[in-house]
Length: 221
Image 1 (cartoon, one colour):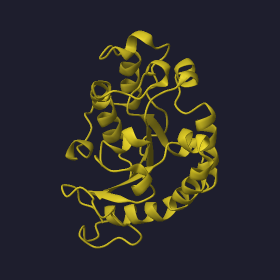
Image 2 (cartoon, one colour; image 1 turned 30 degrees about the vertical axis):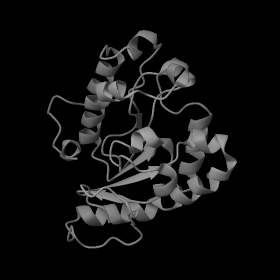
Image 3 (cartoon, helix red, strand yellow; image 1 turned 180 degrees about the vertical axis):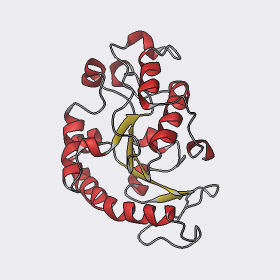
Image 4 (cartoon, helix red, strand yellow; image 1 turned 90 degrees about the vertical axis):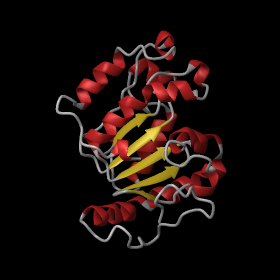
């Protein structure tokens, strides 16, 4: 996962990346969009949320997570003392898939360079993946219902997979999972900052547990 930790290019800025995304023609999704949705949030944010793809309201506004799922995300952030402006929010694909279908592998690959550059610039301490397709970039072959809310170390950064807020809205029995997972984030932030402060990279991190069949190529605690 070293492509997410290299320094950004001097000419890069979040605004410049957003402008490229809005004019992007890398894949067929560009033909059906009203607006591309690059992402929003401050540079140097401690947390980056990565969802799957824009929906209808996001396609109209050009902003991520503005529909019911976005309102629920705002509620979850408020539960741990954060607001939307404190975090960076984006998706693995920047244009709405037709009829809100799942993003396809070639579409995710087409958008990957934008996401990599955003990650390098924001340099978050924690990446929270929302939904299966965002999770699979770091944890392929895992089941999100099995690993949600756990923290995985990739170098000096933590990856925390969570259910997509829209999925929790559809299935009420999953909402307690979302609430519980968000309550862990302040602790994970503390642990991620301890990693970046130069502690022993092999030292155990409390409350971070890999699944029994975690991928061996990743450094997981």
